[in-house]
Length: 601
Image (tube, rainbow, N blue to C red; front, side):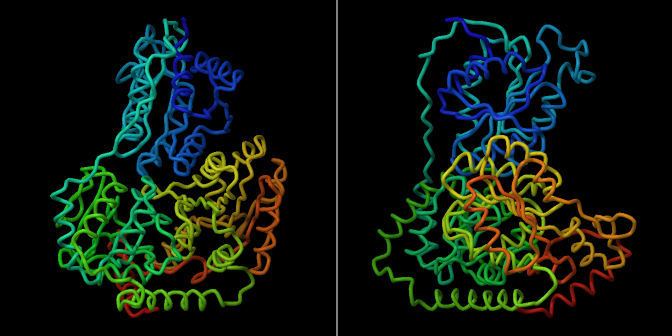
């Protein structure tokens, strides 16, 4: 059977069980797109038409985070391919598997300067711009290479530390034909590595003697979907479980042992538990600057006084930022099972964690945190605060709801304050902190779990970057509830400028027209796309608006006008974050630090 290069790609997607391919057609991918048409006509795969290539990657990213299975994204040559860079960077940093297929210059015409070719340094070399954002890149020079490259791409995406990959398909390769055996080989079954037995035993020695243990769960705990194993070990060991932003919802947050978060955006609960800990078991975390309070000693952690066991699938992360007493290279789920089994074998008098002094200490810290939130949310203003909005959402959203959030005050306060009771329900941009991510990612999540309610929680600056995807949402009837907190500007940066530079240095963040605060008519925009909308501004309006959205069974847009003045424009920072400022403003910074030092919950 003779088939084209484009059809080979689609045959492999079918074999791997990929249900959707997302993108925008162009002259650089005509051969591939014709194969997509044939595949859609035969119900092999469904094509989804987005309005910007960045959003295509974000949708695939959201789908993978919920389902554990990758989707394919395709683009034309040149600008279309480079439009994926933000999405690929986000997926790469957060270890999310996405297959990117880009058009490219004909093999026999490389270097002549065809339309949209970049060739001054090397012939047809735009793919080099995507190399730092991909786990692996391939340029296919012959259609005979395609079957092998497609197999390698799926193996590379999903084996070890997951991540996005890029395959560039020259236009002639997409259309060339070769003999193809549809029963070439079965789908690859990938194994996972367990931890070394010596490392496991060394870790158990430390765990047995720990009095104030903390398990720090990072993004790897979400990717490996190890919530059950994590809970088993935490309860057996009696350890507090603290999560990073990337790891939030890897552990049920209504659990007695849940210790919220540490770091610059953390809570007093998690910060104190981590500083007091005599042993931390770190699972799939990079120990990046926000989690570690920019490595300032004694702010997030007290290494080396606190012992550290670090578990990761990526050897590059072990001992990268902190020396660890025991480093375990392996799959988190398997390592957790090994630690649990070994701990049971070694410890004969295992005590029930309930009622223990350490557990009561965790509960006391959490009671103080809840009292603080209650106090903050009791304020009476002309508009709802983001904290009040988070509190209302925690009451009215179903416990299995999936919430996607992007960079900004909504993300930070959702992280600090929202309680996810079911694992794997928090989707957010971690290390790349990408604006414009939540809306397309929420659509991808809904495609992965059509029977589960999905919310995109965004700020207005965040939403403005991708609002054209309301068209995609309406076009395919994807029933996501978009909740947009409107504070008429990039408020997270305005708040940072205020804190770090002083109110007199705040500049360039508000939406202004003729010297007055300005906002587009977002509800009219949503309605113009064919999406029902509602505008609210008061606490007692949230539940009704959300319930109407849940009952509609279609896409819904809710604009929430939120209070925009400090100290209620955002949340409170309890941790340190190193943001360098000009020398002439350091006196202002010193004063700020002195004021902050005296603050307590």
